Amino acid sequence: MYPEYMQESLKLVEKTRPARLKKALSGEKVFTPMTDAERSEVLTKFHPDYKADAKKKIRIGPNRGENITSEVADILESHSRINPDDFDLSRVDYDTDVLVIGGGGGGAGAALLARENRAKVIIATKLRIGDSNSMMSQGGIQASVNPNDSPAIHYLDVLGGGHFDNKPDLVRTLVMDAPLVIKWLEELGVMFDKNPDGNMVTMLGGGCSRKRMHSARDYTGAAIMRVLRDEVKNHPEDIQVIEFSPAIELLMDEGGQVAGAILYNLETEEYIIVRAKSTIIATGGFGRLHIKEFATTNHYGATADGLVLGYKVGANLLYMDSVQYHPTGAVYPEQILGFLIT
Image (tube, rainbow, N blue to C red; front, top):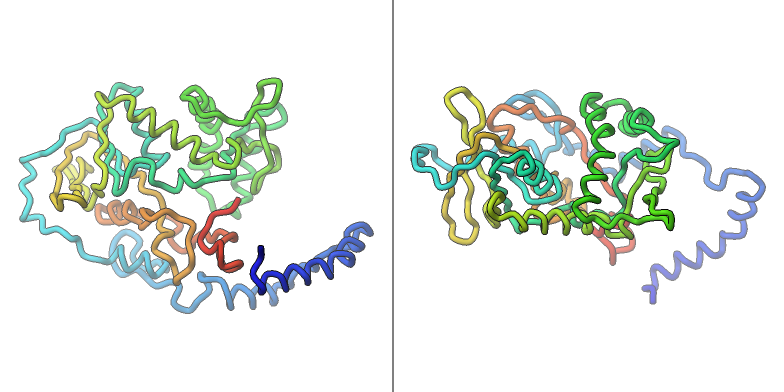
């Protein structure tokens, strides 16, 4: 069942198990914590962020002078693929209240909420609607709904987990909205795990001091994304989906406000002009850039498109100096390289 190199590792685990069990039962530490010097040595040797060329100073734009991830800096400094003189913006292909760029959980959710507020919506997505990291998420989604929990406790957990580098107003929005979002998703039809008494099953998750992680078996993201995708498709009169058409440039009005976008149809190789009263960017992250050739669990569309769009019209980007690396599927065993396991 296991390849030879893994069998040797398993034998070593079995051989050392009695000694580790004895330590655990006696109250001794099974694994001695690494010293700061040892930790630094391991990080410098293996962690992509610690490589000499991991970061570079960006030379243009709102974040000019900041040290950010090299691969991201390169695409932020790149030229636009279009010549503005080639476009007649008086000839609009689509006119809408809200343009949502991105077809994952964030994009679909934004479109549905806009519709609930009587807006006409267009979703433009590079792939198909639902092709996203949301679809692949496994573990769960956190919200404080139990009697021994509260948004305030959740707030403190999030701040601590972020080493107090978080933006407090964003954290507050997250923890206050989370219970409402769980309720909204359940009303749409997401089948969260339930106890026999009908209350939701909650588990401990990363950084939790209370049980607040809600799950749908081990395919939570897929359960949520399927419902959101179906709900979007249930309202074609209000939500139009344009697939395989990434946004490649945001449009600005005379007042310097975003007023839509230029899309590029990957199948017909045609440009599409969308005028919108409001534009929402929900394009996800950039793991598929394979930072420092690191394996990624991200889907194929996670290539920083939204960051580039926003940056070119003056958006200041946050936290561009670091990348989150998921520990599973990173190195060993090779059969799960790049797979998300939570």
